[in-house]
Image (tube, one colour):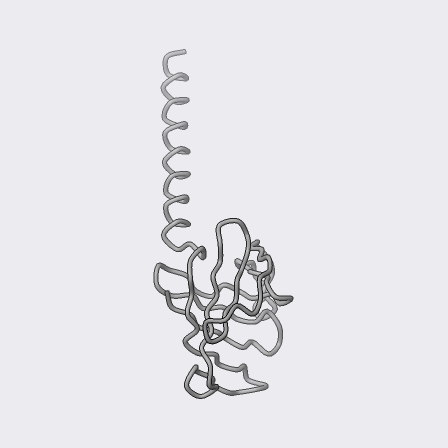
Length: 133
């Protein structure tokens, strides 16, 4: 009985440690924040590079903790809508990724950390958009 109790305690400690590590990782790369558009790069069927300088305007998006995304163009709010993050299948490699859907489009979250966000259109175009905090 004593061995079973110790085994139970060890398992609880193991699972609670794994849970706390996962939570910390998610918080350090949280999408909730203000993101400034740096550039967009078109996919192979439509190669282009667009930046605020080449396109003539700035853009920022604010992802809120209550599931809203607010889009600004030249510091003027142009959209306020919902966003949703979920696991889903990528168009490109047919594997599971974190997907974000907002403004009527679904994107693969290619990279997310404290300073950078890169999303890729989850369709054959594969346009990539890069943001910084």
